[in-house]
Length: 317
Image 1: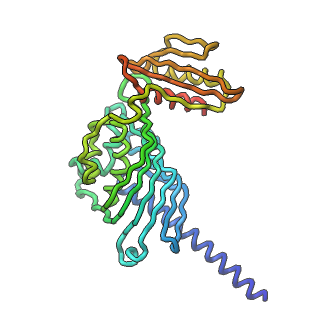
Image 2 (image 1 turned 180 degrees about the vertical axis):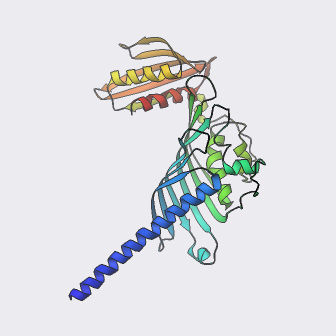
């Protein structure tokens, strides 16, 4: 009986160790491939692989800026789910039946030299002719039938101007599906370029490498739901005074305070040429709603309002 129990325990330990080693190997492989394709450092928080279900679950996938830019997050994907074809893999082919991605944030950065992080990735540089002497990177072939892409927001930071960086936030909150992706390079370009297109940001070189029929050829327009709104609104679990102080600091970093009134919870200011108004609404001793509106020449500037809100939330961390 003891011998039998010992064998069962050893078998369980071996199986557990094998699963850990397998998941660690796949997690390392995903990070390595992403880095090789884009030239940007990546990290994978967690991974779970099921041979029976033929599925992979990845959590906290993050891609960081390439060299020459602040070490901030370029792509933040909290959840990624893959349904794959085991039979195709046995034949030496990568066939993903469905890929689900929830992008929380894309960080677009312009450095002091005026270069953009998204246009400094390997996939963009090689497409635009900035190839290494060894020649372009070989396309990593694969077949992905359907990609379901959830897009959260784009945070833009411009360090090219003097003083503090100009921060704008584009709240997208959009879901789209794409078919027939045929390479890892194409997938990377899709993940990066589509949220930027949805935000209405024009003239980026990365658009030229998405290579998706009916997607890359579409004109980039700024007529989206968020453009009709001139404000950003969030509720924080802090006292009204703390929210007011954080808002004051954020506005002083981003622009210039014109008028403030702590008693009424209102701050008027100018940020990036836009007229800003911050209003507080106290819900309780530890719950405060902050509304920031922005208009420039009478036109709504939701991205500027969201940029100030983003810096306010950073002050409260």
